[in-house]
Length: 294
Picture 1 (cartoon, rainbow, N blue to C red):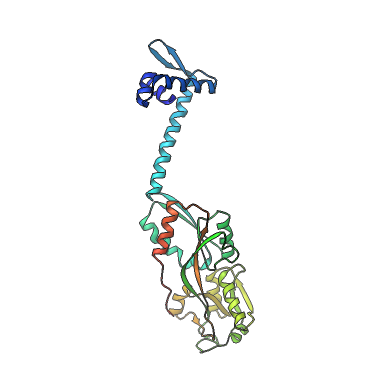
Picture 2: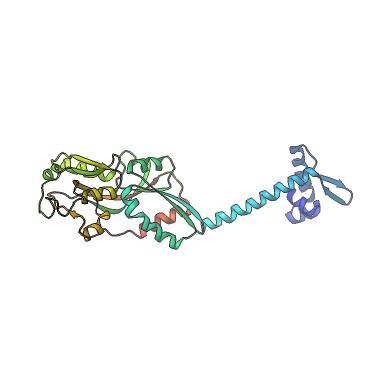
């Protein structure tokens, strides 16, 4: 009400603009003056003037109205997906081979939404989602022990394969035993990687105790080391399509080796999803990719 009175320099005109009675407006201004401990208006017969203190309050009130209008406009833009911000997290496999393409396609439809993608191993991403540092995540395991706190939706099926240099002794041989594979030593990702955890569990279930010879921090490093003859690489099939087609890597045919796991969308169950977050989640589900053929 003060803003209206200061704008019109008239209680009656301010009351008319606000569709209130003049006494109601006058009382509210007096309450504000009492609260601030200052006089905001010079009340003269037939003329209302604003005091120095009133000028200061008026300047701040204009800023408040301006910020309020900007807030309303920004919220409206967010509702209409004209602007927004997403902080996404992904374990290394979906972070390198799935989400970059999906984010690029999403931003073609919603260019005003800024996207930040954080890539780490599954353990780290799960924790950062629980800590509310990441809006939505995609990981390579279902996060055992976290299921009560997280909403988890299987996104796409992923296959973990064993790869080696094309001139490796086991390359091109049908029905290699798991024991033969581990004798040559494994090249795996670091502790906390779902790809590593899932593959090593399968080796154990097949009766072969895995022997890790090389532990690396990225899929690219695993590919390069395996291609150089450093051992048997453990990696998602999503990440080796080009190398296999180019003859740089060979996928081993191992008895009993069926290693599939879902890449899973994750967010806290109790978290409100903003319009941009909901739109991206729905976009991902509607545009699920296929897995490259063997």
